[in-house]
Image 1: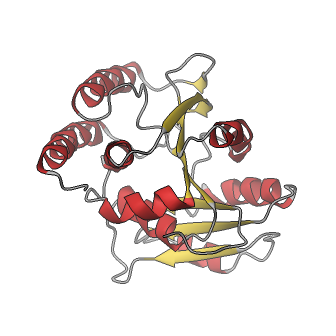
Image 2 (image 1 turned 90 degrees about the vertical axis):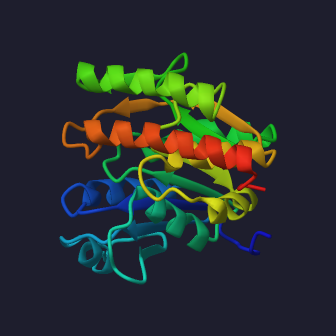
Length: 246
């Protein structure tokens, strides 16, 4: 059951060695939220960074909205999925968004998400593959090809009907987040697929909306990560059949 809260929106930013890219993103997010008529909070989920990511957040002295640092109890790197789960379950908002530390999709996209929640959707996700989406800086051709091929497999085996499961801009109602994220078993790149499969399996409605996305050439998703995701898709498929997400 969702915790009672006066916080309308929680923004979770998973971070692993993001000392250089995170300041610009934090400044953008915090300034945007400070202008909104609703209450908000920002949670940076540090995934065992070896640089100054944690110190940066702890020393941030220009936050117009509450800013919290979260860390794993053991201080180790577990994976993006584990960091997002940590943040989404520590959040207090009636709505909870996770976005990437590189600001590839900017916080103001939430404005186009609210109407979908008003229509009764429980999960609204940003997509680079639906009509009206804009990609201002494209990935290298081999990554784009791998992503498109992977999405075909993902749709066939785990999340039919969702064109882009991997964009790092997804928003949940608090009730849905608190029901689905405790059931997440994948801690690394394949968590996006799993959390959508869990949500759908448990009867939550998912809406896919276009985003503007800027590829960061310094992004951390490697060719090996694509193969890792595909392996984890099979795991999600097995879990669905075995009733793991009931």
